[in-house]
Image 1: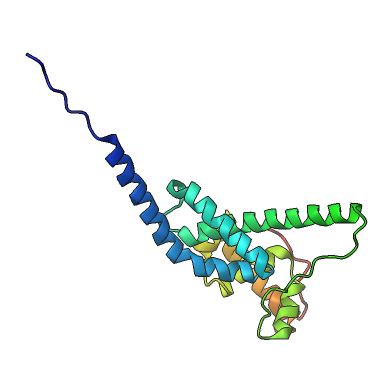
Image 2: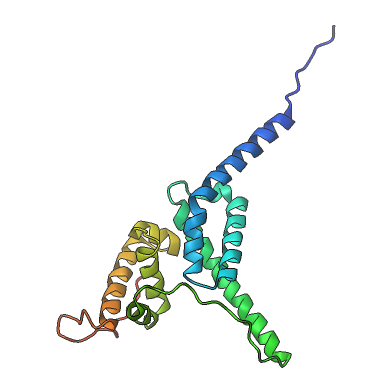
Length: 193
């Protein structure tokens, strides 16, 4: 007698798996899209910000299985920082190419959104890039030190120390918080990694 062997329908399994992946991606996009837009627009012009967000979403789709479920937004901010750095390097390469072609006209760029307080904006601009970023993640993106640590790929303790020092330096730049001995301690720049 012939035996009948049931063959599973792998097509249905693949479709189910693809649907679950798509649904998870869509759920994450709805969670991170607006914060990513704010993150990018605070750091670059609107056109570049749109490109950065699109790049982050592409990485999110490709590496969906690598995204930590308890730190989705910080993970996306880290990817966003890398995408922004890539965009800036690309801009620099294009600028150098244009210079070599003897074109001195630079493309018009819109400025990132201004802070409501020009004095705060000016004081923030005097700080090192690392201080500016930790302050932005804390104040603008409303992240906790452990979330900032995830975004910057360092420890929460290092973030707490950096954040404390950055706040002190910002206060000194604003003329509000000199050191305990009456001096600004801007030379105390020991980095903790």
